[in-house]
Length: 78
Image (cartoon, rainbow, N blue to C red; front, side, top):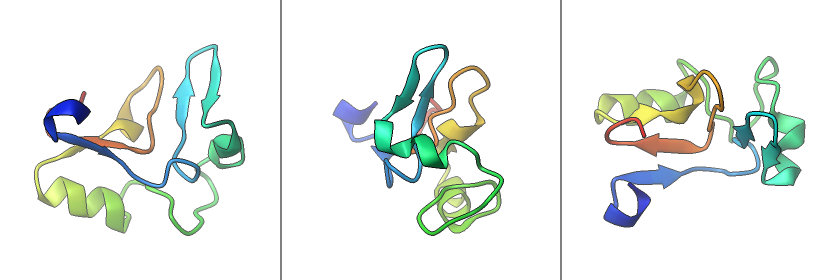
């Protein structure tokens, strides 16, 4: 989806990709895996990033159950 301009990653450190059983990408994002304390730049349900993309019809990778990708927003949710 990224190659087609239909996906974007936002603030990759504050919104890491959590690989099931394999760690966190980027590694500097490990401090942001817990979403219980909201800090600047983080995407979260009801927050400005998730709300803005949602209003444009895009979906957030933070809702993925097995490997959340907090930085990822896309047109089709993939």
